[in-house]
Image 1 (cartoon, rainbow, N blue to C red):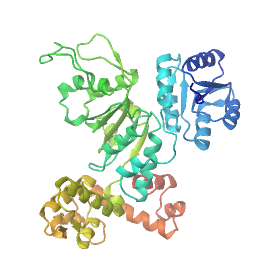
Image 2: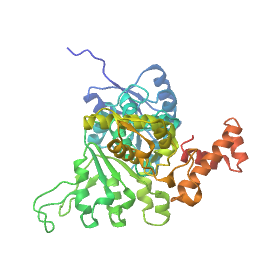
Image 3: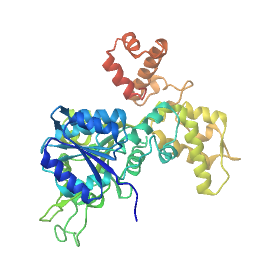
Image 4: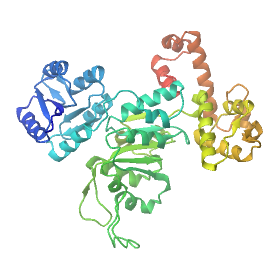
Length: 448
């Protein structure tokens, strides 16, 4: 006889019919339900009981569902909350996701979607803090990386679309995989796609699939990437490279949660979480009208920035040791060691290609070095990207003005913070910046 306690669900809605519908549906799932008619009753129940999931309406007689999400985030951030909103209230749903909601439902509530959401939320891990898997695969002890791991752990518990920004080679796909693997969809597919590598004439077929005979060469039915990712995560890398015509179709698929294959007559319902990334500035792409603003808002519910290697130089030694261990294992040779001067050269290098470039540099040096010792000359680093103090080289040697200006900005901000004992307001005044501008720059540089 199974005597394990039933999982508890808190239902918050002032409409008796909605509460009854949810209670009956969840009861049939062998879940124990508690109901509240307003914000006050919900907060009182949260004080007395431990819950595994909260379902709340957006509009309550004495407040809003957003207030309840914020209340729970402060007191029990590992309790998933799903928002129930009126049909078409997309902005409300997005605000709920940004506030920390797990997911949202629209009225009238579709019972299959409700059961799917509840099952997914109840699969979330209950332990707090970044998992050992994140720490083991996302190496580095610098403050930017510790902050990145915390954000991954939090975002893995949500179904919100995430826009992962960062330079080429910084590890955006790894971050996307970790978000997927630490969330409730971990047992389902993770499907990465490089949007810039698909010929434009094949895009619709690749994303949505096609039926046999729908075009020349379509010799059999083929499911698309959305169907392949059903139940899991679709990672759209270099999403800024999508042509405008495909952006329209992608937006519709995300909004409707359904796709129609090329040559097909009916739509297929798909359940995917969308993660996307690009090394381009999506804001600038929208401003230049190369990227649709409505799609941008659907994809960029939450932005997660991956720091460049220049922003976490303290991690270079850890990363280098890890790469050399892997190379020794892959080749079957004894592990090579880095000469102190070689390590210093790596720390003073600008790494425009980030972690990917570090791996390539070490792989080449591992092959060229003698006596299993990598000397500075074995690294063959570009002199234009080196300096004695770790800052970018002289302006005449810089091949990327944006990188150079970012390094100068970082140096000045750090100097102002140190001189004001890390008082951000005082540092902003010293630099003649508004506090809002200062906060934005700190976030951009990974110093927040």
